[in-house]
Amino acid sequence: MKDFDNIPALMADLGKRAKAASADLAFASAERKHAALIAAADAVWANRADIIEANKKDLEFGRKKGLSPAMMDRLMLDDARIQGMVDGLRTVADQADPVGEVLTEWDMASGLNIQRVRTPLGVIGVIYESRPNVTADAGALCLKSGNAVVLRGGSESFHSSTAIHACLVQGLKAANLPEDAIQLVPTRDRAAVQELLTMTDCVDVIVPRGGKGLVGLVQREARVPVFAHLEGIVHIYVDKAADPQKTLDVVLNAKTRRTGICGAAECLLIHQDVAETLGRDIISALLAADVEIHAEGALALDGTIAATGDDWGKEFLDSIIAAKPVADIDQAIAHIRQFGSNHTDCIMTEDADAAARFFERLDSAILMHNASTQFADGGEFGMGAEIGIATGKMHARGPVGAAQLTSFKYLVRGNGTVRS
Image (cartoon, rainbow, N blue to C red; front, side, top):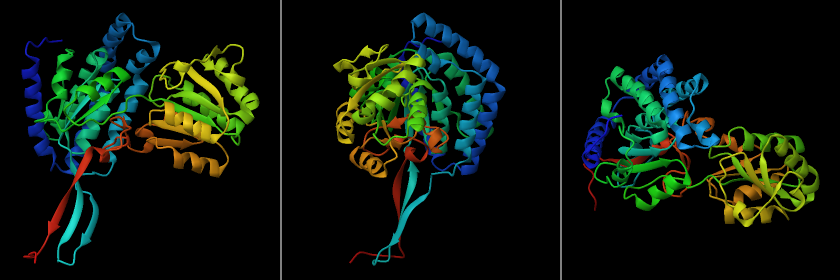
């Protein structure tokens, strides 16, 4: 890894080149962007051995740094995960190009025809931590939406991200698109992040993808607008009308499939009427799956740990979950409003009215009914990939795919039309 003495100059140069590239990308044809992404997918698969070798260096770095098992899982790449990246690149490539899409159109009595059409945001800065696949996801989505991107991967994933980025550049070259459309900050120096957050002259939006520390830093210090979620404090409420088998399947999957992702369940709320029956079955199943359970009330079985106030509103990102009985659906909703993070929350019930009440009275970016919260992912929403999940209420919300990385402009047409 090369050391850079002048980080501000390095970042200013990246930003300047990204801004120039974004001007070309704004009107690049759908065919050329498609070709670039397909070529990039081919390059990722052809170079998978090199990517895995680079990933070994990152895994060793992570071990020395003392990363948790969940974070090491986020960092690790194998053939299956590389195939997932390839599939994501191809899926994004095959989606309809959002740029230029007519969102709405109308005619005015004055004779004007007005269209509102999608247009790229410009330059996007993406700051992420240990998941190297974000390099491919973010690069693909930004390119598809006509945006240039400056990627700043985490120090843990530096070698993997560099190898993946090289494949994306191959795709740009193959399609005769500017190589500066997808740039990777070539240093682990944290000063690069500080610079990126304040580059208002050439960066239009920042997307942080990582833990609470990273996202909090970005939200506090960025002068560029931010799409972000601070934490994935994901709740599952088990209603008195929940189907036992569906609930067992969903809760186990939501907690144990991958514990280190933002869609993993972190808190279980169980209606008091089923706490001593279905609730205890769920707790027993989680204990059998080696999940550490911080429980209270009727859910505090042998093998669980007594819950404390600190367990509510906590993102464990590990094989740990908090659990408590609640009096009814309204108490569950009140708990989620108090301790949730507006990311993803789920209700398990066969009562359509209860599901409707849950959907109506909570305002999380993603609300689910009888489905694992592990589906809180742009790829699972048909977006091919996501650049992150936004929990704010301005512009993008939920999984941020290519369409969410656009703004719009008005095209107004007349025929010598003048205003009286």
